[in-house]
Image (cartoon, rainbow, N blue to C red; front, side, top):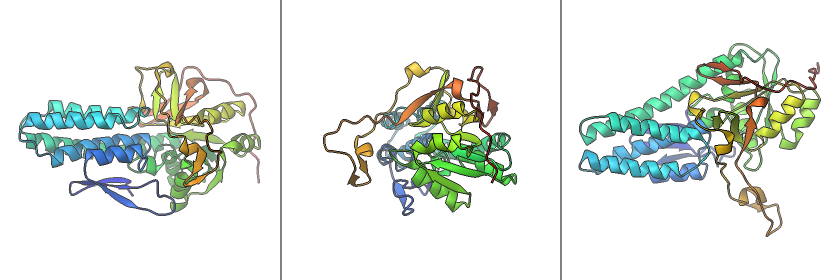
Length: 344
């Protein structure tokens, strides 16, 4: 089931802020509504954000009242600028906008031809995302053994993409090959994407999953309860992986316990023009930390630090799984205390 679709000049998305309690589908009519949906995390996940931005431009093109090609081009440039400002860390957002705008510049003819080209490109990107994830899953399944317990952090499943998923796509592909695979999902404070989204979609799809708090990662690893770690990524620079806050903790603990740490991400997440020193880490509202939904859990007036992402050096990454194959960093740390899986 796709998390985002083009229907009769509208974009329909599942509002992920309502999950897991209810599945609410929302119609988006213009780029401003799409920008708000991205900012408010009604949709999230690097690959999905990219496709959503492309669809935002498609909405501008489809509904434009411009009389000339030049006027439509200006509308698209304005829409692109608004969409670029929604979330600063995930590179897929910028990659998708750049790709659509490249199509705009290369399309000759009337404004009608230009509008058709923009919509077609956005549709193409959505279809490609599903195929990319499935190819990635097949490559990643090679790293998963029958009987493995895979720990994942945040949500890198079908809800973070158009469909199928990146990290969870690897799990799905392994299961489709007949392997018995179970998942341990970190809750992922402060927005609880693991608890709310990863657990929701795995239970929906009949994939065995156990929820743990973020503070339990060291415990389950030290008890030999984890065989592999597979996470997604929002941006991969030359020396590091940027992903949901808490990923670095998981990587360090996996290295300490000799557990393979894998990152599953499409090539569109690669940003080899930058290093971790150039990274812009999104700072989100203090309310995400002080409140759980509408209930306040911290004292009034407390100072809050709330970065949405952290930086995991490639030294901690055993492999990066992409749709083009498995990439191995040139340097990574050697395992220290290899744990033996407990046999029940």
